Length: 249
Image 1 (tube, rainbow, N blue to C red):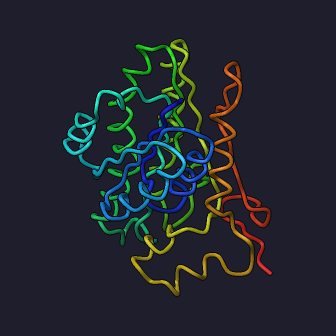
Image 2: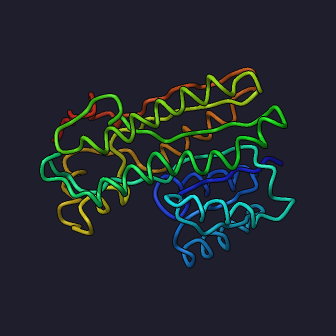
């Protein structure tokens, strides 16, 4: 039985992926910042598979390192890493941008992936097997005004994925970079700092992707035959033609 570690497992794409992989028989290490939500998810999924949870904020390497050091020996062999945790904060121009928002995005979306991956890649290399899935965004494909730092952070995910692939393929490790378009989750609620009304406008007039749609894609990639590696996968809702263009009714 393979073990998959999922960051940002308490909501959105991460939670949907955890639920799907649990039903497919993967052992799961669920990671997140909200202890109570993690515990509830762990309880729910224990009906399908073995689960373990790690509570940490991936922006801080000391927390990441401490969490991974606490893993029992029988949970240290991680076959699949799904770097899902990330965030968008604010929708401001560079001139008016909030420094704290920038730090949240760069630290969470870029450093967080590096910190978590650094803890897991050596074991995969030693075993000559593994699969890393990084969740990027179509924002990496086309920069848009007032979202420049977020776009830059997701472009960095693309670059990290490519670099991992260059350095790890010879050791039998697959690397998949997934770029979702508009997905209806708490993403916009976080970006607009709890403004529900503003967040809802992002998804009005068309059918956005659901978290389960992206989870299906992740499952497809990690269940592909051993000789098949999905390197990059872009997923749009049918109403979205490119990162900035959504056709609303």
